[in-house]
Each structure stands twice: as C-alpha cells, then as structure tokens.
Length: 165
Image (cartoon, rainbow, N blue to C red):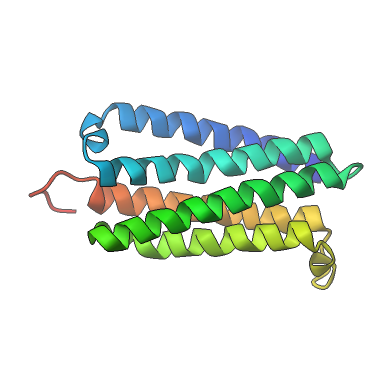
C-alpha cells in the first residue's frame, strides 16, 4: 500500500473512532461526573485524536517535505506521552483503574518511540524501513493500544458499581 493512501485511511479511521467515542460517552453521562473517570474518558479520546492529527500531518508533509510530519509527530507524541504519564500518575495516587495501567504504559512507550523516530529517522533505516513507514507501524500499535484501553475501561472501570465485568 502506498504510504500516502495508508495515512489518508488511517487519519479518517481515527477521526471516525473519535466520533464513535463521543457517541459512547454521550450515552454514559455518569462517566463525566467523577473527575477520575472523566480523565480516563479524555485519555481515550486523545488515544484516537492524536494519531488522527499525526496522520493528517503525514499527508500534508508526505515524503517530499519530511520536516513537516517529523516535527508534528515529535510535538504531538510528546503531548501524548506527557498526558498519558500524567493520567498514570494521577491514577496511581488515587488508586483508580489498575486495569488501565498496562495499555497506558504501552501507549506512553509507543509515543516515546514515535518521537525518537521523528528526531532520529535513521533508526528506521536500520530495520529496513523508511521513517514514515516505521511511524505508520507505531501509530497502528498506538491505535491498537487505544482499543485495548477502551475495552478495559468499558468492561471494568466504566461499569457502574455492583455490576459484573
């Protein structure tokens, strides 16, 4: 598949996931009443929005002007990593949602790798990929982790107290 086609489809899919998540949240207003749950809901939102934005910048920058997508990937992934680590820190202090720790740690690690490839694109060449291809794989992993986060939240932390997961 052509990389620009991938990013067009990827970005559109991620924006669709953002819309679907808004719809789910709209049907669960109770999630927004508690600050800890509201933060997790926002974290899930970012897990689809930030990759969608990176996909857009990959289309704008493309292969011809890699500086655009590389800079945007670094900035956006730093925002994602810091946001995810902040959520983890707040969650551990509050003792909330231990089932979300693994997907959040994984997401923070992938965000970090995205920034590293953006800053040092030669790393991708060491494994036989163009930098924008390596980033596509990492972004796919990030969305996969976002799906895991949604599943763990909806099957556990997002369920009303007293109901079986």
